[in-house]
Amino acid sequence: MRLSTFSLVAFSALVSANSVTPPTHYGVLLFQAFQALDVFGPLDVLNLHSGTQKNLTLSLLSRNLSPVSTVPVMMNTTFGQSLQPTHTLSSPPPDLEVLIVPGGIGTRAPDLGAEVDFIRTIFPSLRYLISICTGNVLVARAGLLDGKKATGNKKSWSWLTQQGNKTHWVAKARWVVSSEKIWSTSGVSAGVDGFLNFMETVYGEEVARNLEIGLEWSRVTDPNADEFADIWQVEDVLPVE
Amino acid sequence: MRLSTFSLVAFSALVSANSVTPPTHYGVLLFQAFQALDVFGPLDVLNLHSGTQKNLTLSLLSRNLSPVSTVPVMMNTTFGQSLQPTHTLSSPPPDLEVLIVPGGIGTRAPDLGAEVDFIRTIFPSLRYLISICTGNVLVARAGLLDGKKATGNKKSWSWLTQQGNKTHWVAKARWVVSSEKIWSTSGVSAGVDGFLNFMETVYGEEVARNLEIGLEWSRVTDPNADEFADIWQVEDVLPVE
Image (tube, rainbow over all chains, first blue to last red; front, top):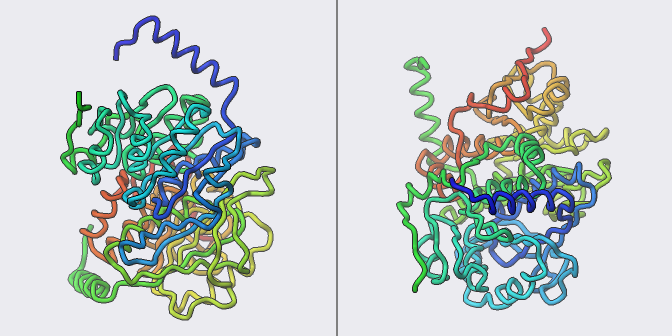
């Protein structure tokens, strides 16, 4: 990789600034039939991190305050788990810094306007957005991936890439840093690798390494090492001019 | 590996029998300060599997029906998530087939007698027990790993292995099949690799492979490929004679 002098300086300044003021307030967007591991992978990284950084706060955001279930009711199954939201989308906490958007079958629901509007509206006040799996569909619909590179779930590639035609969808990627504010990851488990890359960028290499070891996570550290792109035989989808 | 004719026949019979009657009723033991990924790793494997095997049932078992939190209150942090139990330990569902026992800081609590008693009491009626991370401490205290090989969290190795002195604790193991009923896994993320091995044994190779690919899980398929044993420089602990 070739880095210009300017970008190296800018990168150093970014890391330095982030080291001084790491984010403390994380949020997760929840909706019916979210993918459990998309949420609990990154959250368990944070659970472990909260043992050393004591001032972390978590907000769980949903349309209303009813428990939100992973169960894909449209698939005629009742097996799943539920999470209790802490805030509604219309009354989010004012100081949210990082928003995690999971994927799941629920991203195929016909009416996700409230979730997409929430992402679009809150984005300017966020410091970071972590978009996982088919959660990238919601972020793309919010227009936040326009003109950017991103990735997503490989099994759902053909559908997913049709949901945002102003994005360069990168097929062979475990995750993509779409901008200095947005991490876009491939499917489910890739969320943890992408999130650990985010943690490394924000908190430094040692913190990320300790979290990886603590969780005994066999981490993929090369963003382009994506065996699932080969398995699903997917290819890059370029933005429509 | 050398297999005698007898063991090959016995193995084929076992696989055949399991193919005919795969388990449908899974349970998870919950306690204060359980490790989220120990639970949601295997459960998200099952969430995905429930899309094809529609008759899966999940029970979440705890001392009482209050929400159970991952928060390690003893560590002066409030960051975490909660799950709502479906059953108490004193009134478990009568037809539970598979019990998943997670680890977490909560396994260090002074009074876990109710959980250990529950594991010991329900075990004879179970078909399978999946013991993850420091959850192996609870299973060892219940006497179920006496005279068997097992493994567990590598960061907590010296403490963990002192909790069951009739067990051969295997250091370099992502998971150990302790008996035809018990899978014992290493820390946190290793639970998914061990659980996928369980799924492969019970449902067959194709099912496990589809789950692995569906979750984009970079699976460790060799039970002895454990980089974390080297990182923590742990060694086998033999049973006290």
